[in-house]
Image (cartoon, rainbow, N blue to C red; front, top):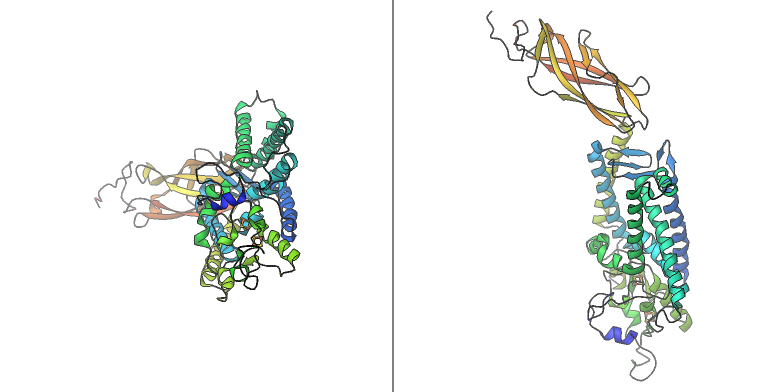
Length: 478
Ligand code: SF4
Ligand code: SF4
């Protein structure tokens, strides 16, 4: 299909022909200065994506998203299931950060740093060009391909996809588990093997078949970008004042005196990995990869015209309507982010190596198990966040007469484990005033962790009258 016929067809989606069939894109890379910068960044990011699961901070992995245990370790801090609020804060901060970055720099993450683009444009497409020959609508893809070359290409795709699947799963299971999966026979761990095979299949599907459609129709960030951008956001823009009326010298072309700098050569559309024409204005499909900038700059260089007919700019600047860097939405995003980061940072710094919560027991609020002695049943919930197994002792701290008997003491917890044990707190009846008595319990691991918690015991309103054994008060006969 020629470029001219494609341009004549009514636009459905850049990856669809008007009849609904797939429009396969084989963009021709434009190896300008921005492409070279992206390539350096991409190879650096591939190294980072691969190495991060192997990095540790302290005794913990730098990043481990352990979904089965509902534990997420980021930069050495582990979010446990009890840290839902902290995780929610982190998530909101991240979303605000994305909104802020997009409002300033547009969709630069997509074109420059997203793993989808990095692997697609700098691993799979180069492999495709290696085996299928130079791309571009003017040369049918696969022209130089033979069955042997196609087979070899897909064999390499499978190998690269398997490597990506291992890298991806390392973030979720950790490198030690991954090493076991690799070393052991699939018969010994069929489920893990199937998971790995499934993820490899998904990678193959994504990078060899679905491709740029992930950015165009599947990625929620791409769908939301229109509400994150404003007229002052940095986007890849075509300058119609300079470029129009477009056309080449020849019959039917605009008057040379009036003709703009765009010669309608199609280089910018041929190089676009999402198959759009940036001269139509800002579009949902544009991932800000800047390939069209490099392509057009090369054309302008050859024609002796200034670069920048397509450039990074904003809608306001392109329309000569001025441009503002500082906008209310940026200030708002930054202020809320700063506030959230402060709260999150403070909470993380104050986190100890264990979480302890005292829970009121069920049933009667108190019992008089021995004459003159009131007992409350409580639950002591301890979460070990120290990263190592630990034993936590539950003790009475104040007043001196209070006693604690726990069903298990010390409480042995594995790293990351959380458990609740029942405990009985007993104190003399005379310590109660107005039915209440405040006590302090101490929970410690005998090493780095020790925490004292206040607890209000419930008891008889009248400290002198005997209470029923089930916690109901006897009538005051005095
Ligand atoms: S590459 Fe530049 S000159 Fe060529 S069609 Fe695109 S905008 Fe016009
Ligand atoms: S229009 Fe330009 S910047 Fe946008 S995706 Fe296409 S080539 Fe990349």
